[in-house]
Image 1 (cartoon, rainbow, N blue to C red):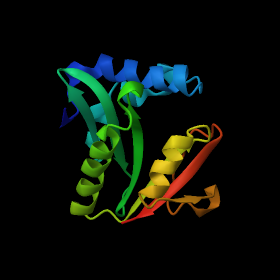
Image 2 (cartoon, helix red, strand yellow):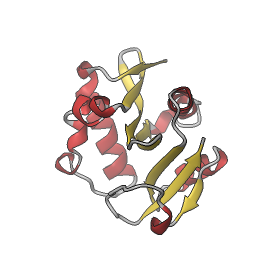
Image 3 (spheres, rainbow, N blue to C red):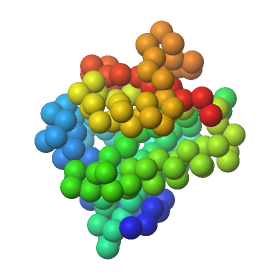
Length: 157
């Protein structure tokens, strides 16, 4: 397994993995049309100083994690997914450590994320990693998110 920055050749695999987890596992019913960032990762992530990493094993995408730059040393984690049969194999941890190391090295101070309320395992992971659950009124910068029964988490680096 290796973690690499976004490569267009993996776009279809990334989309398939994310939609499968969102819709078949989490049952949150998001369409690709509601996620235009997946159709143009460079414009949504890299162009504004963000990044998008993928975990690849034998040319197969097995995980993703991205962040968007929100200015003033603020970031929002996005698209954190690992294939179901490979969870608890430290792939998510490797993706997370890659992102957090990058954010620290580049002077980011606050990291926000939103996650579906049904994603109990994700909540446990974030809390163990030091994220604190917050209310919408506590978001420290302007952030529009799809309010789909989501929880918000904040990490101060």
